[in-house]
Image (cartoon, rainbow, N blue to C red):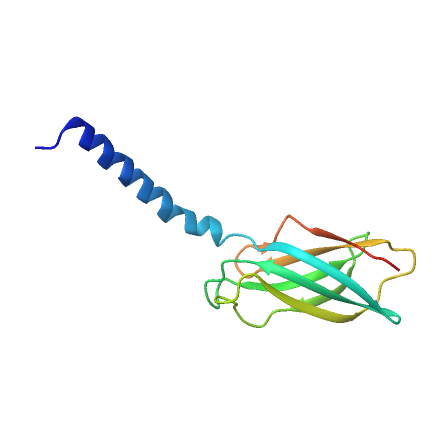
Length: 128
């Protein structure tokens, strides 16, 4: 015979298990930009961007990040050619990005194959 307290405990653990199972889709949601830096080299810039995404194979992985000017123009982009399931977070660089004179900061945006571009961007100040 199961006591009332035991039933409540069992219900609690069932709900907890259900909640934990439903967390993974949230974790495997949009790609997150953890960090980004810029370094000037002559007349162009090198950007290093660190992304976090619960890659789930070829159909759902972080596949691109872009450098955006103040007007939203794409100044450079780094295509990511494969999932990084066992390397999280991960950093990739892009060199040769030309930034127009007078621009003091840019924004980084990232995309994954399933959700598209994340609504959240990352601002990078440019020290000239």
